Amino acid sequence: MCGICGYVSKKNITLGQLKAMNDTMYHRGPDDSGEEIYPASMGYQVGLAQRRLSILDLSALGHQPMHSENKRVSVVYNGEIYNFQELKKELADYSFRSNCDTEVIIAAYLKWGIQCIERFNGMFAIALYDRETDSLYLVRDRIGKKPLYYWYEDRNLVFASELKPIMKCPGFQGEIAREVLPRYLFQQYINAPESVYQNVYKLEPGAVLRFTGGQIKIWKYWDIREVYARAQSNPVSSYEEAREQLKALLKKAVAARMIADVPLGSFLSGGYDSSLVTAIAQEHAQEPVKTFSIGFHEERYNEAKYARAVADYLGTDHTELTIGEQDMFELVESIPQYYDEPFADSSQIATMMVSKLARERVTVALSGDGGDEFFCGYNIYENVAQAQKLDMLGGLVHGICHLPGLRQAHIEEKLPFKVRVIAGNREKESKTQFGAGNYIVKARAMVGELGSDEKALPIHYLMESRYGVKNWQVRRMLLDMDTYLPGDILCKVDRASMKYSLESRCPILDPDVMEFSYRIPHAYKYAGSDKKHILKEIAYDYIPRALLERPKVGFGVPLDQWLRGPLKDQLLDYSSYDFLKNQNIFDAEYVSRMIQTYVATGDAGPATGANYSKLSWSFFVFQQWYERYHGNKKTKDVL
Figure: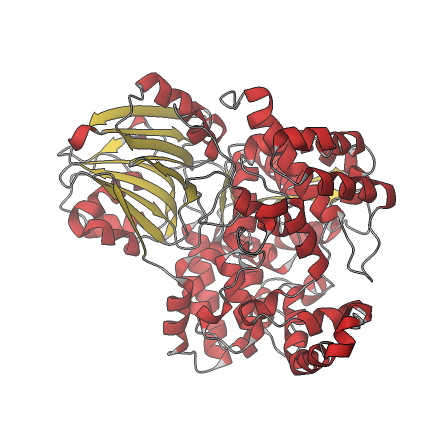
């Protein structure tokens, strides 16, 4: 696990400047660093740099940038190729010097070309420079576990695992991409390919970028829509077959992720996904697996006792930390330093805390991420199923309410909240993304003119028809795999864990597991009203049902209390008319009035759909980020 950065540019970027860019990611790789610059054709120079967190082959032979024996290829890379030992056997004609997966990338490229990435089972962000073709390739893993940004402007390319190295690059101005802000305020994250800056992008999951002669070409080598469609043509024939094959694939995926030359453990929340992963890991381990969980003083959120019961049953070496509101609150100021793009999923705070706890004893931690998206675990999927059943009725209500006389009387606005949501859900490309329309209106209004439909990105992801799926639950799951999972969940875990130089590995996101899940009939995942049915049944092979079967309890940061309590003065300063007018990003009059009203009245309750702490928190996090990187013109003082 590491951080990488570099460039192909005609600008004179010195080795010292490249090192300064690289060192902004010290937390991603405290064990080693390397920076090199090479001449290229047409007046370009290539710079490659990496910060290393040593996991495999801890010797100096794993140093990056790494080069092929004939010096044709140079690589910097972040991640893990779990099947590198198997690939190494196929590449026996290459003279390996190290026992690390980075060198396997080089050998595989020399034998198979850039198509070699389709053979890699892992999580990765790769930058590979081929002197023979004078091409730089950027590659991101299939589901987007590892981040990769790039800045492309004036036929120059700069790339990095995080935004900080790009911010530090000479000549970077950092113009805010205001058109993404309404969507960010609503969704609380910025999804690929967009970023918060103009001309800076995230390489999408499963994508390759090739830079040659000042031009870039991007293509997908793994696309959820295409992979799902292929898998559906070959469904699993029976439940027992699906269950046994899935269990075998999960066992193989966990075993592959336990290969490390450093201490390894597992996050354990006591839920199905993390408990199953931990149980399989314990089965493979030579000694008790180190497990980690956090508990909360607020009893209604505290699931630590369930995690402890699972740990006791499995016999793991368990560590638990009970935290309070103040412990979490103290991390708020560090959010923009490690999430160096506005990111407002408040569960990042708890994720940082459990990562910190784990790092005290291990360098690698297994997680259960991906179980909800691939096996139908979120509560929203139940709501989606109900909404599909009521859609025709909702269309009828909408039509009646828009009859000339009734439209003028604003009848639809007087309907109960849930009825209003179903009736208003008429956009075909976002059928599964229904919700309170007043959130959307406010998110757009906060950015003023650029929040309008014509100039801003759509608030919702208008792409559902691309999946060709009639079942709304399946459609929403696929959409979440394309958006919410990589853009929010995996981003959250990557930044939170790397804040403490901890590598997080996700067995459920193994390519073989993901692709096999597409062959499993949906009725095996959502059986009646039982979410994640097949995954639960496998978990019961390891852990008694009584220890796992309970309502899901999510933990939410008390945003309303914070924003109208200890953060109130800061929030009001950020939203003052004079501050916003000078900043020239948001609609000063609208936002100032909205925040003042929110601070005075608070959330109005779920019955009306007026829960404005979410928008206010997104705004607050943006302003924290802006203050750190753009306040007082100190844009380069990023650490």
